[in-house]
Image (cartoon, rainbow, N blue to C red; front, side, top):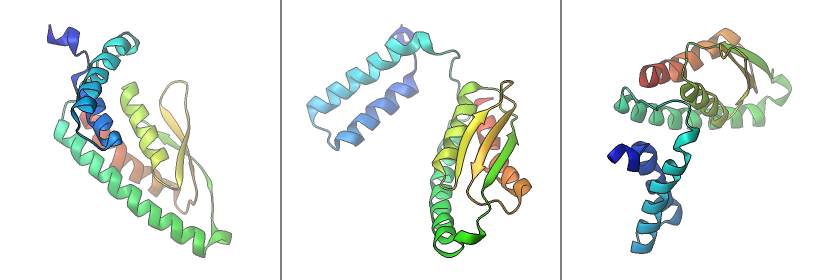
Length: 162
């Protein structure tokens, strides 16, 4: 019964909280409207989900969010320093990151995390979904960047979703 009403309960909670945060109020009307949207959006879109989302380690997901926020802040400072001091010495380029992730949701989260981090953009996923093409603003050591991406982002996502 509950699964038919809430096909994706975590999504419902997240939508409701985001609605309240975006409206910056907990007025009764917004609480009710946000709750209705949080129920009906996942309910109407349930048929489009290819896989059932299973979060194996929810506390690791919370830790992952904080790591991503920290990395975004650090990357902002590094990009600002690179742009303001060494524009002529920038070495932009592309990297191909081999993926161990198999879940489409986990791959999507990895690609979005990389794009959210200043200085990097996810450009393409190979047809076999085994590698992710990334553009970086400055590449000194491609292997070090790939290792960092795999350690900071891919490894936790693999533990959370696979």
